[in-house]
Image (cartoon, rainbow, N blue to C red):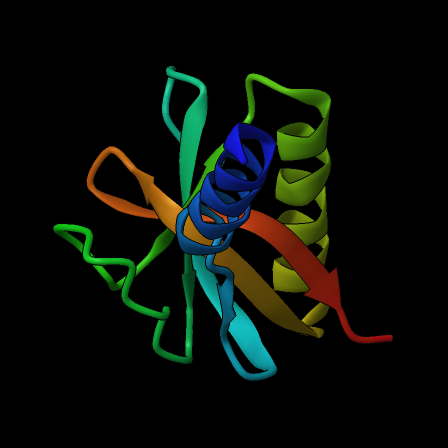
Length: 105
């Protein structure tokens, strides 16, 4: 019985914690870089609300290899004018945390 309760709790927790939302295909308007490991990406579409203080941007955490790759994709899209889809999940401080950036060929 206890195993079933633990499994049910884990399933419910994982579903509610990792809700992912995405923008429609859009273009990167600007990227704001700072000396800390977080960079802001602004797109033409509305960033899905994650109940964060600011919803006009998504934040990329570049302290990881994946974050650095996302920033590279965002920069490439900005320079080439290609469309992107930004997926966000939760807040990173004051704005939604970017977890995926897809670039349309």
